[in-house]
Image 1 (cartoon, rainbow, N blue to C red):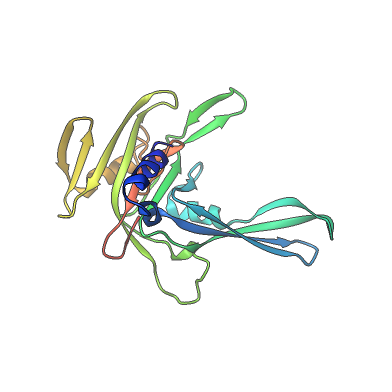
Image 2 (tube, rainbow, N blue to C red):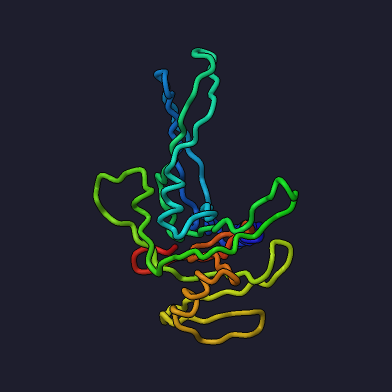
Length: 219
């Protein structure tokens, strides 16, 4: 929510700035036992990934590709079972990924934080979840930032690891800044207590946010 607010404010100063972070997801709905197909698209600036019971981004990508099964209603056909598939049709120049570290517990009626280890790379290939996978070309993003969270689902502290143009990494916590190496935040990324939102960005279910960018493309 804060990130979206920031982008909206920046848009007033730098028109079209949000386009750098905007991609498009295509949803393809198919009937299971009937002849039916429908396509729709959805723009995104933050790409959320499920991480509960997932070890790394590769696992989360598989979940994203797994179709949703639901009951569909169309006037000409009636009610029928359908599958909805998802893929990215247009990747953003800068990819912000949200690792969904917070879940709502229906039993306790409270938010829970997922503290299980989760691995993420310095370089991310987005091609496995792209709509067009026939060109056998990779779509690489270089990690340029990670937002970490220490604490519970109800309280805690955020700090960031950022890569500068010099390729040097810095950890920023409030007014404190120190130089680090990439192994430092990669360790945080799989630390159960620090629960980094992985190299990709996100927000309040937010993830530790991270963004990639670089010679290939940023995440």
